[in-house]
Length: 155
Picture: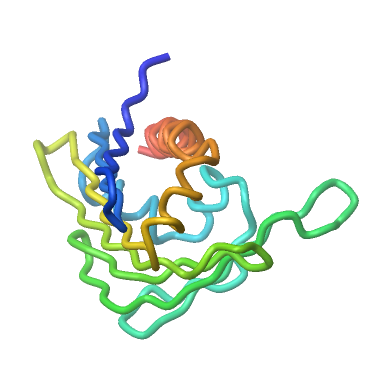
């Protein structure tokens, strides 16, 4: 399967750049990142808190079939401009990963297509490299594929 989500990581840098073009209008792509019901579907997690505004916060949690928390993450939204950009922190709880800073930029390509550009800045090169050792790129591509499928069904 072709990976439509591209992850670029230069050697000895603290950041990664993620790009993905979607067969979705800009407004629907932005909704997929800002409406809790849609996020829960494509990310496969429960949204506990989602304040999409400057100085807002968010919190996600995933439990296994026995009710044990297997993933928990939270952050603060630092900038929020409808259909343009979101700047936020991302912190996975109970892991060795430090919080990261994410800059999401949404771009209209045509009336029916759009592009997402994400710059993620890590605490150190080591933190970034540890993240990349996980199946991060594959998982993100799979999640973006689900996002596109789910939102297309809602059009």
